[in-house]
Figure 1: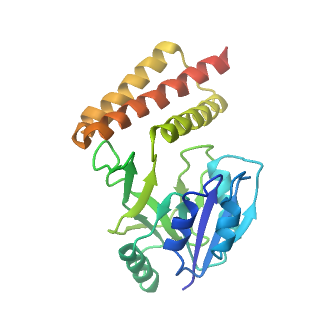
Figure 2: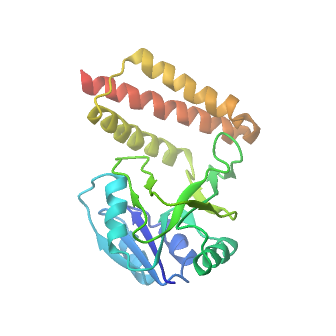
Length: 246
């Protein structure tokens, strides 16, 4: 069984190297670049990855389907540029491919936020479906928060995928702005409506759910920052939708 690793990236020169080195054992590594202005393409190419460029950004789901169409392996592992596969997860992936009991696998994801690996706030175990037989799954066409679609049984791996997300508050604010814009556009295209009171209500609920119901307070200061960030992103998603409807 052969394995293709697919990664979509844009301006990820600081992260793409660790990601690709963690899967150097794969049969094929494909990076679909979205038009980077930094050294992402050069770094990926120097590490032996096949690099293709598609700068006409159609959204996360469609871009991942483009990367998937380039894969030739029997199995596909989809990674984000800021994710890495540990030695323990590699062993589990290889065992699953040798003797599969499912065609699609999910795995827990351990995410770092501003220097701390979070265990609460909805961020653990944070199962994500990433490993699948080629031809048995595809990505949804969502602009953001895409999901893998398959009619096959989903198995579960136990070793976590490592996720170095939100290294600092500048990155947090940048992603909140970009993701809220994409979320507003997606909601607009679905015909949704929103007012500022709805934006406030959803923002408060995002904070309460993250910090209280999902016990984000147990992650200390980073747990509070995450809850505020979720509220911030949610509020602006609905506020931007309201402005688009104006």
